[in-house]
Amino acid sequence: MNATIYTTPTCGYCKQAKIYLNNLGVSVKEIDISRDPRAAEEINRKTGQTSVPVIIIKGSTVVGFDKNRINLLLGVN
Figure 1 (cartoon, one colour):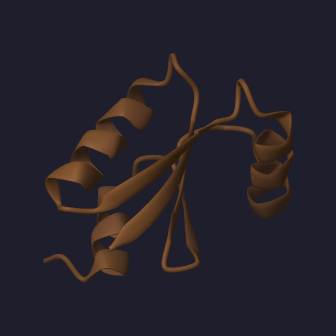
Figure 2: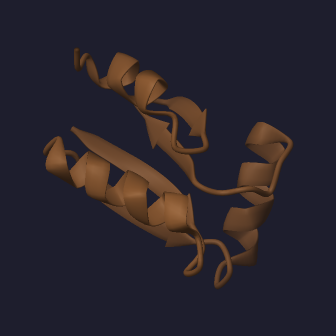
């Protein structure tokens, strides 16, 4: 399973989300929006926000570190 996570270096929830996904065996591609303005624009276009983390799993978008939504998308009970 793969996920993409949009982050910033100072985001504590981003770090927690990465650890959580890694512990579930999910391969995580991290995109730092503080260094990639196009990525920041992309998440703003997709979500209407600039907050992080934004996590893409199976084409679905999760805004914030929402364990319940992440588990649902990954089929974790």
